Length: 512
Image 1 (spheres, rainbow, N blue to C red):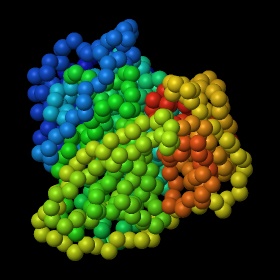
Image 2 (spheres, rainbow, N blue to C red):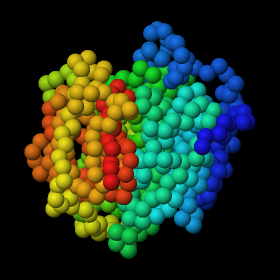
Image 3 (cartoon, one colour):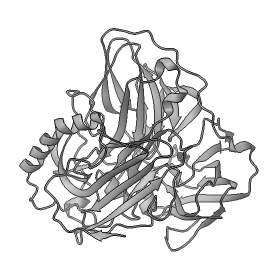
Image 4 (cartoon, rainbow, N blue to C red):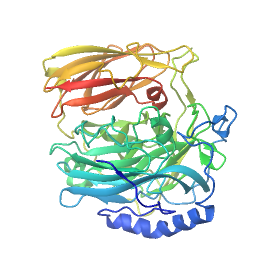
């Protein structure tokens, strides 16, 4: 099924071969030439940097092992640019992704990055429930890779969401997905998932968003068609003129971007309601997102609409998680969208990491004020697995060694040849996820989403299904999960990719 690449790659690839929306065409027409000029000026024929994942033989004193440069900061001088979109037409989204190491213009610098079609922030793939998606995936890296559509309910086998499949260097593979008609509307994302390389490739820049349309139907008529923004949280550690991909430490200085921009301006009128799709599409770090003085009204989490809209002053967003929120413009003036200080370790322990406060974007509220709309309270119907009979129970225990360099599930490290858990199609199971360590681990399972029942014994409000949830240090989380539609072999793991790549992943087999 895989064909060898027969032509040398062009110096720059900025066009996506697909049904491109008018917004995408405008974006590419404006920024494509600039990206091309910058890449040419930067010298596409230059010797690649030493920090290349999969490249053999750097010594411990090579640049990839060094401490990264300080995090970059900037004044808000440019407006937020939502990524261009690739939109399904007639029930089909067809596109091409070229994976390669390129120089990109990022945070005011020209940097080496791992890119999809030459872009650090690639287009958003936009589709509807029941659609099909075909992606011609061309690997021009010097190492294997693959593609995972995070959170989507789709087959884990064959040419679909198959993380056991590797696309080798110089090869092209066509992914083909058929989504169910009841696919939940919301925000998802895509990224690489080759075991041992997921961290390096995602941290290097390989991630983008997927939007499943249909959330509008749960909004009151007055809020349908409101201004919508992607708030894709992507972070990188800087090493000279390259994004660091090897030897990553979560506590190291890290530059945080929104849609690949450093502190962009988000415009809103006082009282105006906007929909923001907040998604952590990085490899490892946590965000505690807040817009001080303005509450975030959650309408969907991890791609699933909620049953009741709830408001939060801040949202903890681990790597992989998403929240769709309604935001109403504050009084005229300037405020900052920030990530607040956050610790992933147990109080009193030396485990985990401390994440500092950082500015993500500058929100400028101005123009003619509008009357703030009444926000909905009741929203969408949700699945309640709490009333379902339980066919089986499992315990999944996260542990790590004292040095924090090796990670385990039920005392074992990942082996793709071994099936760790078996479940049966059409049943509901109750799982207890134990975290026997002093730092947070983020639980994620492919193919089917789950309902959180209890955390540390405390019953949780059922706002809807999720796919990436933090398990507190020395704590437990009880979930229920239903196995629908698809049999096959899939995985569950900690979504802190440093931990996943270091062993904290297991194989789940779903049988008829």
